[in-house]
Amino acid sequence: MKKATKLAVLLGMGLLAVGVLAQTSDAAKEDAAKNAKPVADAVSKGADLQDGASKAQETTASDYVIGADDMLHISVWKEPDLSETLPVRPDGKISMPLLNDVSAAGLTPLQLKDSITEKLKKYIADPRVTVVVTAMNSRRIFVTGEVLHTGPMILLPHMTVLQALAQAGFTQFANPKNIYLLRTENGRQEKLPFNYKEVVKGNHPEQNIPLKPGDTVVVP
Image 1 (cartoon, one colour):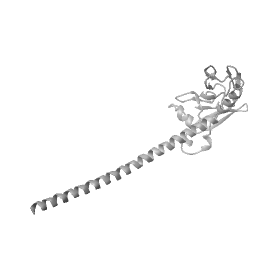
Image 2 (cartoon, rainbow, N blue to C red):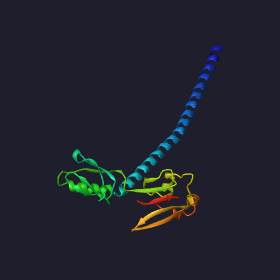
Image 3 (cartoon, one colour):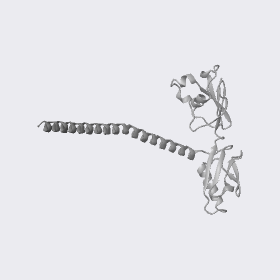
Image 4 (spheres, helix red, strand yellow):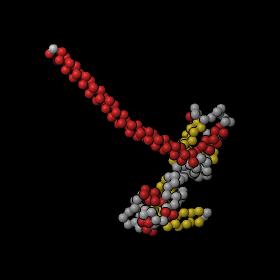
């Protein structure tokens, strides 16, 4: 009788332990699932951001207009003698083997690629051309005066006066209220005022205009 009682007690304890383990396992699975969801969401968001950045870069690259002083890398598949890095001359042209002078300024990389491909068909069967802008030297602005980094600056897409000043920095003697932009259009120079103090407060947003190649920002 005592043996039967002991067996019953042991059996009950065993069943209880199994139940506790099962509950613990289920809880662990639920916690793992909860923890995995934020990670998966973060990875998904990161992938979306990366895709968006890639698409933005592709759009910028395809819209870029080549100008004088830009550096281009021309690659022709399986034709190493025709693949090289070339500067765009002041007259807007590049010099290539077989083709001699090719107009590049005023074209996008895709348009130049199509132009070179069409010209090479006279000499090569099914030419595959790639055009990459390695240095955007034609798109430069200048910042001068009481700034930490004076001189030419690469003009990024959609860069504004405020963004250029953020990159240049002010000296302790700068007068940010009387900054002005010098812009030459149609042979005439314009002087456009820019009050840094007001613009950073959200006032006069019309002064924070997109910059154009050749613009000069002066900080008195």
